[in-house]
Image (cartoon, rainbow over all chains, first blue to last red; front, side):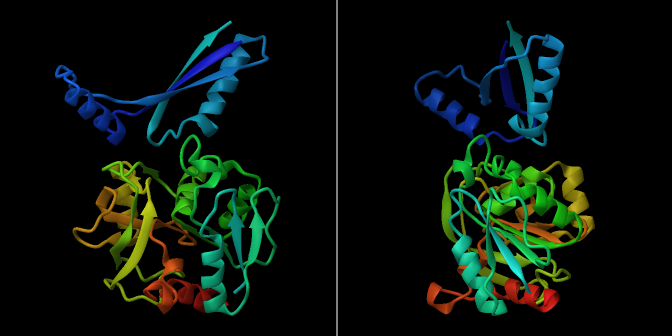
Length: 80
Length: 223
């Protein structure tokens, strides 16, 4: 089973990297860019047959390590 | 005062911390490897030094927070043993949950390495009792992720409980930290995390001795 985890900053948390990317895009002539927020994607391959169990494990992984829930939120996408 | 310095892969201020501790306490600290399972039982102070543990992978401090030795650091901190986290050590302490909030990327995205003005906000702690409240000193900072962030409720709580140990002096905030916070105490006041480097200003040959007070405070309290 494969999982893709999206880790993004929560609303209201300052994202200086996203801001810098936005500026760079504006400077490249993409004047329609108003706001950029960046995050990360983590791909995980699991040897787990049960989708429910995999999802529960991934949830724990996000809580314990993959995201810092003080500032980040996460989404889990599962594919077989 | 018996102290221990934890060494993570890519710690780079561990020996500076050890020298500062030895100079002030007269006792050589024990260096403990991150993969060891426990610290000596009778240790009075644990130092998590500056550096780039685990190459700052995932988030700075995130991997170190889950290394084997940290279980014992957490246990001992919960029992009241003093823990000092400097720079990367502060990041490790927030990632383990021993201190609230998180240190995010500097507001201007640049790594800062310079001397800043630092105000002592709280002298009622085992880390700061040798300083006078309001005293402004000079201390170096060297970090890319030192921008202290926490929600307003947490920040208010830190202020109400007098847990902000140090603030950057007016107009000298080098990283965008909320309320100019440079160092905070845990609720029990036995854990201190700070971004500036007191261990780098303990010898006049290195340009200053403003950091000595912190180690002297600890020696006074814990010996």
